[in-house]
Length: 591
Image (cartoon, rainbow, N blue to C red; front, side, top):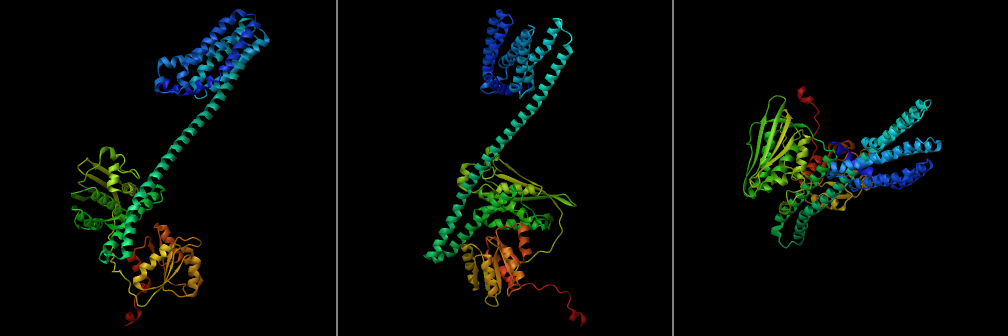
């Protein structure tokens, strides 16, 4: 940055400050005329008035562009030189007048001349507060005047006071420089604070705009599944077409899953923004994960007439990481690929390199869709943004899937990148470096569509929302359980104190005493239900939240929204607990 570019912004402040000093200069000019008259130099008054008026007009004209605001157009010789020159010239004519008046030898006039110089110097503290160069330009003529004053006294025969005068001059300008340094530092701190406040204001306004965009997009996108659920519910309620009930139920289930996916994306995005997202680390088989993912998406791809290719069921490759989040990224990428591809192939490709303790994994999802326009690439990983208005209208979505996927990839220490040629499809590549894992036994799950009921169960369902209580009643209806409901922890404890139950379904987040505290009080009560199985359910899925439920005494935990199959499996587990391992059979050993 050149000298002009450095000075120009500060000349704006100086120009506005000097505009406020015009009246002071007029008064000072009149005083100097009076002093010239008192000193017997009346012939100098006319030239002095003409000179000071001309310089004032020059300064007013020269600083006009800066009063309007400094920009690149003022950083030219024709603009900068008159501005700097008029500043120095204005200080010079007042300092010169002070020296002339000092040389008169009159004590009162000499004192007044010193005050003119001191006042002019202090004035430059204000007009040159932001720039050391401008301060020195305006102050140098006054400094020269103070040095010249003792010299003129010495030339007139006075010598004894010369060292004292020079000492005073040095002390004065030392003090002025010290004051200017402190004032300048304070001004710079103020400017920095104002700049930071301006940036924060812009960030806050941008955040508010993002939140408004989020609210508009989410509101729009949620209306689609909500409309489907309401329409499907009305069809089932009226019962005009009993043969359409399975199809209508599937519509409601799909709409509910769509809503759940949107809410999960919003929750994940919020967690990542708040740096509250946690990843688990466990051993998993990458080959099995890729095969399961391909099987899951093969039906949607086939329904659209697409071919989904993926690595075959090869040799197990055990790695250590978070398979759930890795699967989430792949689901987002494959879902988008199927959404934006009308015909052709969607390919899931995988390469693994390296040996020993770490492996480099590269997973690519490639489609033959419309591709991504170059201008849309910059918005690809922007929250609540779509590639274009046409994309938003045609395909919908919150625009969070890719954002969450990239952030998850970075949390894993990897990166998610995109490459595309408009009209020729797109490829999204996930690159990770993961530790080598250890093979673990596969977990088999029994069919838990309905628990094995040996008798009619007495179930207490605790939830503060009536809709949730009605939902539990509907889901449990096929099991023909004896259901009692409670709307808060106090009502639940009263019911548990008077009647025996086989299972308690406990909402975790409730007003008053929450589900965890209710469970703790139940376990500590030593009442008839102190040992009853308690299954907690909550929308909070963090590991710490689940651990808190188990620490409170809950036997199991389910995530909201409740899936009937998972609830049935939890009930089956509660009424048919696995017996603890008591060690070897001692009687058989003895035999």
